[in-house]
Image (cartoon, rainbow, N blue to C red; front, side, top):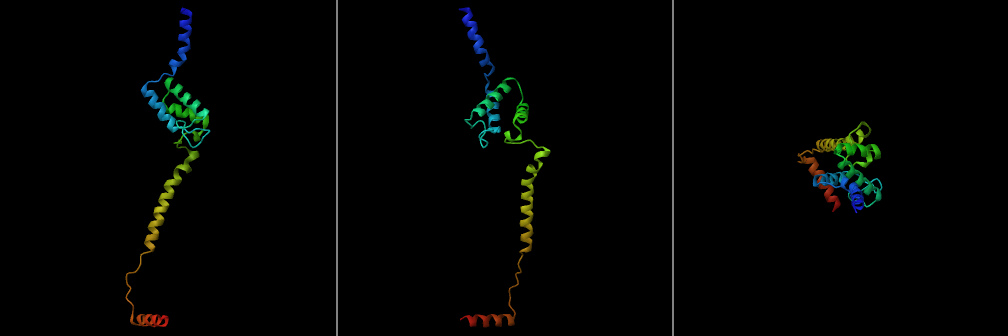
Length: 144
């Protein structure tokens, strides 16, 4: 009987490694929303039902249980899957253009609007001279 009890405890030992405190569970759930499913591509692993997403969730939970920080976990995911796996990619020289294009577009758009507004200032002097008024009357009479 003791032998069966010990075997039962040995079988439960791996499950203890994945038992999470509420703080660890919250960390894991937060990380799940930051990581893209490599199969689904438009979903986080929190929302994906793909088998690889489940594997990634288990890997993250195991890393948290092992005492790794969120930054270390993100770095491991980046090393294994590349920049694409993170919804918020790292700022690096290889993706510098991706980080700079949106603010540049906004600045150029604002400058374009400002310059177009400056050019479209219209004159408020609409008073016709006597000859212009006479020509206008002639044109209007010819239309009737």
